[in-house]
Length: 167
Image (cartoon, rainbow, N blue to C red):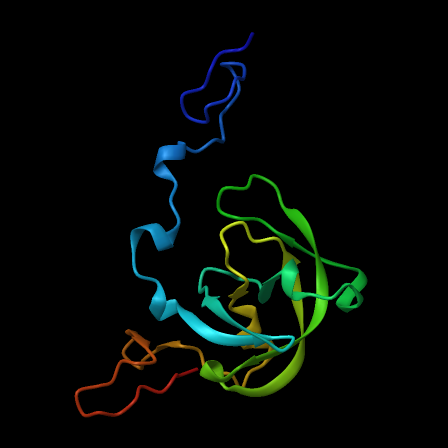
């Protein structure tokens, strides 16, 4: 039998590189810090949910399969994603959904394409960077000030002025 790996808690040959992660060292951001400043009220297909604004997500909108009707899936259209702990890309279907998020400037429903996944941690929607490129009029909850400082939407300058996103 192959050797037990203390890193991934599995058996594999000693000469193979282990891509495992020590299970004790993996935690959700929600386990380690207050993420409420990144979670915003959102509506998907008429359902009121909370979405995570994920600036590390270079794709667009990712939604849980529980929010999607089968007839919204776009036949033959998929997206490939690779998470931080994945060694290979995985393929997921795309769906056309009705999406509204007043916090970022979508005060009415618009039809957008979203990547459909099964979230394991109870999340239902992840808003990635590509959505802000696809719909340029949106206002991100985070922006970069003229001096290169990151400014959250609730942060104000000492004068009381809101920081305006610069391009």
